[in-house]
Amino acid sequence: MDHIRNFCIIAHIDHGKSTLADRLLLKTGTLDERDFQDQVLDDMELERERGITIKSHAIQMEHEYKGKHHILNLIDTPGHVDFSYEVSRSIAACEGALLIVDATQGIQAQTISVLYQAIDHNLEIIPVLNKMDMDSAMPDEVKDQIEDLIGCDRGEIIEASGKTGQGVEEILEAIIERIPAPEGDPEAPLQALIFDSVFNSYRGIFAYFRIMNGSIRKGEMVKFVATGKEYDADEVGVLKLGPEPRDILSAGDVGYIISGIKTSKEVKVGDTITHVDRPCDEIISGFENVKPMVFAGIYPVDADDYENLRNSIEKLQLNDASLTFIPESSAALGFGFRCGFLGLLHMEIVQERLDREFNMDVITTVPNVSFNVISTKGELVEVHNPSGLPVSTAIDHIEEPYIIAQVISQAEYVGSVMNLCLDKRGTLKNQVYLTSNRVELTFDMPLAEIVFDFYDRLKSISKGYASFDYHPHGYRKADLVKLDILLNGEMVDALSTLIHRDNAYDFGRRICVKLKELIPRQQYEVAIQAAIGAKVIARETVKALRKDVTAKCYGGDITRKRKLLEKQKKGKKRMRQVGNIEIPQSAFLAVLKLD
Image 1 (cartoon, rainbow, N blue to C red):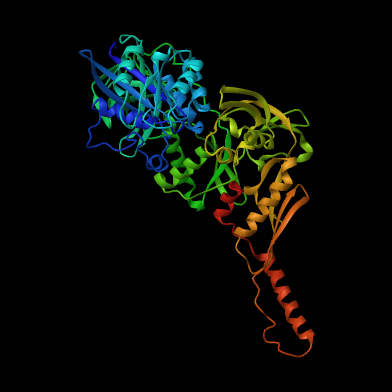
Image 2 (cartoon, rainbow, N blue to C red):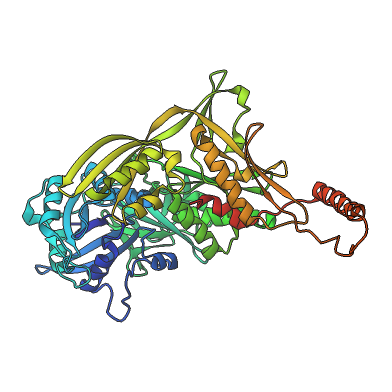
């Protein structure tokens, strides 16, 4: 155990975590030049395409140092705020963390929040200054920020570059010297923490775990504590570039277990594995359940695909434990699922993965957050969906979730960032100058306001420099109304939203204008209306496609033309009564991107 080191890499998005991880793999010979490709740990097509890490990836490296052989277990983590749950799991399985800061950008909001998590878990932090080869690097300034943040000595900060390989040797040295070896008793009853799992269609579910105490051998009977199910360990092993079987793994090791589990409900992330004949006394704590922030309905385009969609979401949930879902039905879209996500990017990625990995065509409804509705009888109802709102006469008041948002930006963009946050009903709590040119702004704002386009707008007004992080901060009373969209008097429940009264008129008008562009013209006139209760607040009309019925009249009295037009009008009216309107998928998506 003295020669094992478990560590993760934490940093803001785009600070070069994956590139540095590549360098560590090359340096330790885990990967040879022939197999090398950039971002080698990002094995999902989607990750490579977008250049972001979505999943945390565990891999084992071996390194000789001072004549001794060491095993280093690295967990590379995502940097985007929407995947912060992945990071919290990696932190629970490690003793140390590499804190990587971009020398050209300095400390960002996400770095700070993740760092506090790591410190809470008593991890040893090794600060690394990355991208030192760039001309715009500001090492002295950024080192000052790191010193202020974690109170380390200036000499402890390692200068490195993932691109050129500078500083990689020092990083490996620091990992072995500074990060403590795992503690645990190999003789005690088995106690292992599941921190991830993947589905394999041939061999069932691979559960990834970190052993805290005890040891596990191939062929032993094990028990998953949370579900109470017992399995035979068909194969155990360590994670190199691919899984490598081993006969025994003991305390401190990170590895995987295959036991032929086929149903995804039986493996829970954060669960404890123990032996059947000699169980451990207590389960591993410090693992909180994820709280989704954004809710949206996901429906199959073809109603017959409902069961396939359920299976696909369950398999996806194995690999992405922060996704939650419950079945629901909608008048317009049939049967589907109400899914909870950590943010808009998370929602987009889940939708993409359903399409690519499981070939599912889905329709996603307008995202919203969960509200607490207090009825006139004083009962509390949690509402995730506008259609689940009780009748207005039974509602005393509605409470909406609030967040504390931290934005770190360059000083020149402070004005526009403040305007954006104040437009979104935020209140400024605090303003701190981290350096002469970098400001940390803290806002108190409703979560519902950041669900739509906040992140995109923040990036565009700050030319990509501002970074954003948030955490929930309770519920407060709000003046919210339900905004319905009607097509020819028929309500489309998938487009309903709960919105603040002050923004309802503007939002309703924008949706109507957008739908007018997207709904194809019919043989009859289509009225698009936005309404609060029975009061219509905006209206647009899609004009009918009309045949020129008066073309054959080339003379005579006006009454001949009038008669033909009246006849056409009656036909259109009859058609409108029986006709129904197909709303294209693009209309649901466009509502999300109204700007």
